[in-house]
Image 1 (cartoon, helix red, strand yellow):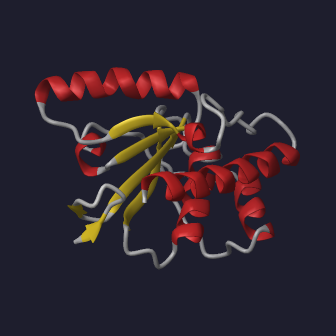
Image 2 (cartoon, one colour; image 1 turned 180 degrees about the vertical axis):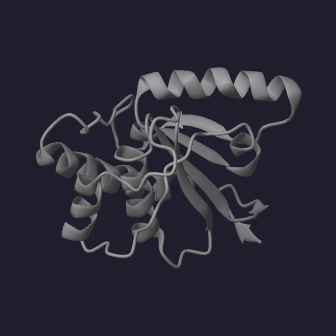
Length: 166
């Protein structure tokens, strides 16, 4: 067991990143977070999902993969999936990319919690970036620059998470 900042023994922390389609922002967050926390025994399972099922089974957007490769992350593989009720019991932190997905997750957690205990803390990932309520704009319909900006946010948010939670 690892010791948290509070000094209480705990199992490694599991994290789920969530956006709309699970092909741009959340897989970018997952891969970036895994790269930053590689080898850290305080981190357990890390995954990503979408609130919509539009791209279930698809690989990340090619621009997501290009951005990761441009930043030295070359070994990331992922199949898009939709967030499920079990995620609220399997993950300690469920981190949304924007307020719309956060609201969806909060409603879903209320429905799940009515049936079973859910340990997952549902939060906005951007709250770990030094500015409260910071969102990651969906780069899907924009240019490659949107993916670069999103990546920079993921790095900052991931480092903030590690500093605050671990």
